[in-house]
Length: 459
Ligand SMILES: [Zn+2]
Image 1 (cartoon, rainbow, N blue to C red):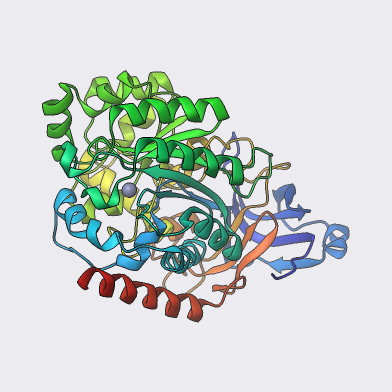
Image 2 (image 1 turned 120 degrees about the horizontal axis):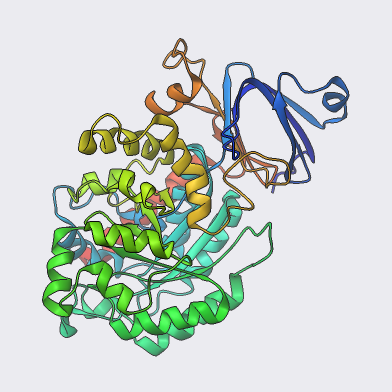
């Protein structure tokens, strides 16, 4: 555990606050004390404030943004990157389920630490996880990922996922990786009671997350929603990712995926859906009217050929839209800043030049993500009183220098190095290296975990 200064001044950087007026400073300063932002403004920090700070970080050549918020992820998949690379979603899942059946605590901890380390190095200060594979005898996988997040130092929203609809019941996953409904509900309640922290500066908040319409029963969806609402925690699932899923829902339930989950009580401002690519106009309107959030994962959707979500229409309908990397088995890059770039480029490729602005992309990754996770009051913008979750990007490198607008350099240029990443005022990245963990050790452990899983699947 590194000790971090209590009082920071970041001085002389370009600043994008994402406050209500979307204030930006070409040259500005931010003052942090005891984990929170206490001041932000134009120009240099006053001399007395600089003198009182434990640490003054010169920001010349840099852009300061709110820390990015990752709203959809499967950390364990870091151990199965590069598999089934030319498959559709259902083919890809069918190829990987037997490999994931070999997960245990050690594999999950190594994969989670590597994936979260990578998240931090690409500007994320908060990340979700959706873990839904709990093989019999695999150990305490949920605790393993929570400990990995604590070691890396990111704010963490793990979701207790689940599957109870195996192939013998008409579902997609093999029976070997699904759980019994009562066991799922018990383990989910246990995860909430052990790890969920409702306090305003929480480092860990838990949500409830049955996996998808084709891998869970309607009964599990209904009971999971009741459990979450009893405990005041959020709900998450995959929805409307591919046309295959729509065919499945129409054949089995006589409804679109959105109509189906609405019938189970799964639309509302305490719910966020991963993907939401294949939506009718009526679906978009229902999500907007109910305040249901969406985790948009452009790279994963492209990798699996799933399509491009209607981000312009969703935002216009009032849907909170955040960005997600999704699991690394369908997005080997695992880079949140790349999702910002892809969200803008893909939206325009789909919907024309007006579909999303460069700043819309950054807004989804910050304010949008905070709204999706129900933390708009705490994170997502740089304002006095908010948590000091901040990303300071170098935009004066060979690749970026001369791009006229630093926000454009960040969003449309290649991913810039991170000068500093603070989570609650604690340094997680400095000089583009993790300071909370040994990157080389994370890489070695992740490689060992990947080899272990493949060897188990082959035996
Ligand atoms: Zn996913």
